[in-house]
Structures are given as structure tokens and as C-alpha cells.
Length: 512
Image (cartoon, rainbow, N blue to C red; front, side):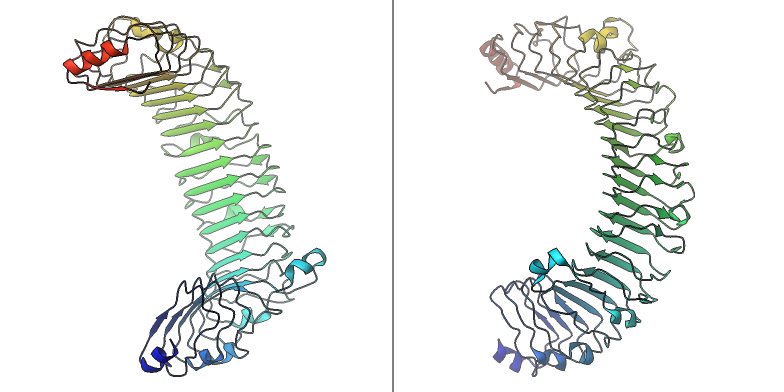
């Protein structure tokens, strides 16, 4: 390699990514025109040769994922004046390298870990964030990962042009002074940040992500009018989030595993198109979500104390893991609702009132206490029904109205799946389902009979683990039937069904 570098005097890009046996970089004295040097993922790299300081035109240096790097030239920061992008990690050094003279640096990604950190960590001393970071006047992006950093030097201000900041410093107790220019801030695993955080002056902030910090309060959060993405995860000390209604550009809100969060105050902004609230076990008070008219994606998972957060207009509503939810209020006025998914709400016993006429898809699973459903047959736009593991539901609770002769009932239902309904013995006559294309009945161990006829529109029939079922309706008359799948239905005459399907050129699948 040394010979090649001596020959290629006009080389501008040198990419040594993944040279796992490389322990020290070659000398660069004959290749002074290199502009981009990539040493990424050189797992054995211990040392960068001092001749790198000859690369006066170097603008890009990537030594990320070099997990044994521990030797840098002492004067690295003095001679690479053209350097604009620098990634170093993980550095095993006793002190931070001095990079204060990299006056044109715009992006810095630094992972730092003292070589004897494991022995020091039990009695961690004071280690300050390097003061020279404040001197990098053109710096726009800073990523700093270090479990060793505990404090910020008094008076340290991060560079005034800084736009993006990511800190992963588990022992950092206080932040440096941050410039108002920041548009993206990510604080990950900063477990020792335990005071209130004042965000009032960050008017340009468009993305804020805080995870695993001991922050108690987010002051000024409701004033960030340019905020588009807000993610708060594992903030165990935060009890309340302020009114976010003035954040008119906020599109994505994620709140996860904030165990002591009790309340989200005020209203949510109409601009939201994604809301995720999950595993906030103490949360009991939410804003009126009816303000999210026409929103396409709202999900509330495993927030056991949230009981009254429905009755809202949106297209997609998912209620998952709400163990204390016993009654689902009337949704009949939620005129935008197209899809309703209710899963693992084990104490849900009742869905009040009616479901909205706009509903197209209904999925209910693992709601073991649910005994009744609203009348589904009059939902003219309903195209898909999927009921699984609701062990107390009887078939008449689902299809009770289907036996009516009115042509307007169930007029658009195309997909019906019924699974794990142990009490079901009879499937009522489905012949009025004039658009039903797929019928899937699974794990109904007591099902004896499918009454009447199957609809002429049926294209696919799947029966799985219905061990008591002895007979199917006539399949010969179904001109559109394309596929029949039978699995573990031991009382059905599978051979006869196979011959019948063969005669009709219907695909037959027997997985027994």
C-alpha cells in the first residue's frame, strides 16, 4: 500500500473501509492531494500516522467504528485547516484530543472513552466537555458520545452556527449553553440530566428527541412553533406535558415509556398526522382528540389508565393493550373513521352505541371479556371484518343481522375472518353477502355447521382447526371459487372435497 501511495501522487479519495487487519495507517507524505480519507470500520486500527498532517487539502476524514483507535497525532488539530467533516470513534485516550484549530470544521462526530474507564466508572471523577468545541465557529453539526463526560465548563457556549446536536453522555449532569440556531436536538441516554429543561429560546427547533433522561420538566415546549417532530421516550420523572396546540407545524408526536406521566394538557395541534403514545402506565388524562379531524394515524398502546380517549374523528384508530378499558364509548359520530382496531383489551366488555357509517375495516382481537358487538350489518361501507380470540363472543353477536333478507345489509363486505371463537357452534347463512370474496374460519373447535349457502361471489374459502365441522355447504354452484384450503378439520371428508375441486379446476390445499 505504501508503494501505491508513493506512485499515486494525484490521489484525491482513499477509501480503506473494513480493512480489519490494518493497525496503523500508511504514511501520506507522497499523497498530499488526498481530499477524502475513509477509515470506517477498521476494527484493528490503533494509530493514525502523523503524516496525515501533510494533507492540507483534506476536507473529509471518517474514522468511525474503529473500536481500538487510541493514538492520534498530537498536532492533528493544528495542520488540517481545510477539514470540514470529521468522524472519530471510538477513541480510547486519556484526554480529549485538541481540535481547537480546525477553523473550517462543519461536522464533528466524536466518540470518546478513556482506556481505563471500566475501572474508573465506579468512582467516576469530574470530566468536562472540551472547551475547544466552543471555538469551532463554523460548526453546524455536533455528535458527542462519552460516558466519561460529567460537566460542562463554566461559560461554555456551543458554536453560534450549530444547527444539529446529538449527545449521548450518560453521566452528563448539565448542558452547555446552546445557541438559538439549533434546529435538531437529540439527547439519548443522558441519564444524569435531572433538572428542568428550558426550551423557550429555541425558536428554530424543528426536531426534538429526548430518551432516557432524568429531566423533570420541559419548560417552553409549547412555544416551539417550528417543531415538526417530537419524540419523548423513557423520561421517568416527567409528570406533565404542556399544551401543544400552538405547535402548528408539528406532524409527528411520539411519547413512550414515560412511567410517571399523568397528563398531556390542553389540545393537540391540527397539523399532526402521526400520534404514538405507548407504555405510559400512569397516564389518565389526554387532550380531546376530536381536534384531530381527518388524521390518518393515531395509536395508543399499553396506557392502562386511559379510559376516555375516543369519540374522535379520524381515519384510523388503534386501541392496543388497554387492560383497564371496560367500555368503549359511542363512536357513531366519528364520521371520518375508516379503520378500527381493538387488540388485547382483556377487560373490554361493551362497545356502546353504534359504529360510524364510514367504517370500512374492523379488527378486534384478544378481547376476552367482550360479549356483544354493535349491529354491523347496516355498515354499508364495511369491507373487512376480522374477529380473533374474543372467546365470549357468540356468532349471533357478529352475524345476527345477516339472516335478514334485505339486500342493503352487508352489501360491501369482501373479507370475513373469524378465529378462536370457542363457543360458536353454527355459522349463520352467509348467502346474502353478495360481495364476499374471502371467508376464513379458524380455530372454532365447536363449530358443527355452516348453514345455508355460500355466496356466489366467494373466491377463496379457508377452514382451519375446526375439529367438529362435519360438512360444508355445496361448492359446486360457486362459479367464482378459485381456492379452497382445509387444515386440521378431521371430521371433514377431505378426499371428497379434493375430488370436487379437481373437477371444478379449483386449487385445493390440504395441510393435514
